[in-house]
Image (tube, rainbow, N blue to C red; front, side, top):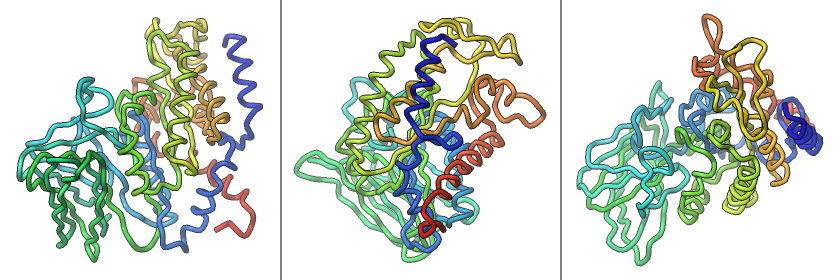
Length: 410
């Protein structure tokens, strides 16, 4: 590790108070107190995570959701992109369908169109249709029913009408408005429901997110809003008015920010440019969600066998003792140090994902064995690995919970 980077890591670590892999946990106190009260609180605890493919794939967030809901109660599936915004879209615990007649816009990847004017919100995708009868649906998996549907959409002159349905309840909602904007509408089923739908009555309509929840019984809701291949800078392509409307509707108790892998794999990575960008991106999130506790995940350990990524402005990434071929990218340690430093400066808690895994060069070992924890690409996690990461994350949060004053503990 280059000397300057080692100094930066030491300075970042010294600036924060850490217990296990979780640093500055005191900044999570409002969330931790609500989680502690969850068994007796009729209002759900809402966690909203934005991120890259680790979030989109729902291996980790899905396991974390299952763990939390088994312990504190099931509050619902949470916020999602509407329909099926890309091939291979995963929706654990719920099944989404989408009829023909829709177009998709996104902040990154095949759905991103630089010249497009369609605005996007928290989900990082918008679904648009001009076709009467075009429909998107949600069906509960494994008896994980819900009784409330919330839909967020763009409004404005000439906008069309959609019909919301959940269980036996339905509602027609006109999106026409004097000026362009964004609104959300909630429909209650009046009882447990296993399905929900949105149908175009008249176009054009643009839908930015939807949410299924249980209106009674509290529990935990964990939303995973990920974009494959994205970096946090791409979330800057979302529309601030839409994001603000959705945050006011969904009211998260904790926002988790989980990027960094794609930044570390970016050719020509510049530490100075990344630090400036991350500082601005975190400031934007703090401004859009004032008072909401936030937790920044550091980039997990990963590895590459591409020589061009094993060297960079900071020098050459040292080899791992377990593999002569695979090693972390040259940028990974810098990304992690910058994330830790900027989280502390922004008043955001930090979870050292790589440390929780076991530190540098852990990824190669996690790909080994008959039931590996990581896939052969040394980047993505298997189902078993996702469950293990969720367990270690919650263990660190439990230590922070245990540190609360006695009267606040569950």
